[in-house]
Image (cartoon, rainbow, N blue to C red; front, side, top):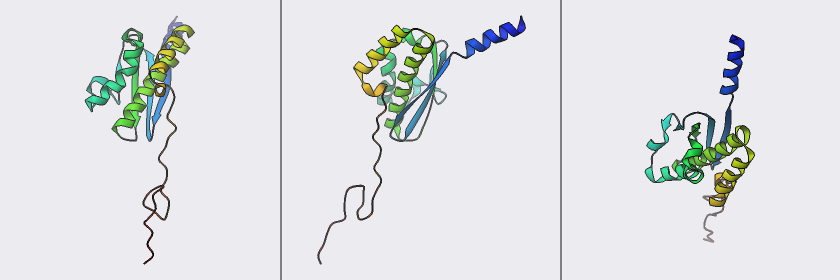
Length: 153
């Protein structure tokens, strides 16, 4: 009996997915598991995230999909690197990819398809990473493309 209950606990605890979001140099990793609607970024609630104007960007996937879909999952996000804006874009991508992956793995394919279509229709960058990166500086100028001014005397 004891080993059976332990196996049941292990299978319940195993209902997690791990996804990531990237933007420039920021990387956000989201752990999505069954729970009661928790949304935390680096250990603090999502409502306390600053700056406030960018906070709405993080709520986009939640508001698009609907809060009732997020009621039964806990999402914990770790983010590092980059600046404020790129971190926020990485977080929202990690959350969106996480909810899609969770619904694909543990719920059903049809609700996953609905969520995915809704997100892609609103903004493709919620599920697809932006491949643009900073171009390295070259010699003979002060930037990647700009050259020093040419002078003959």
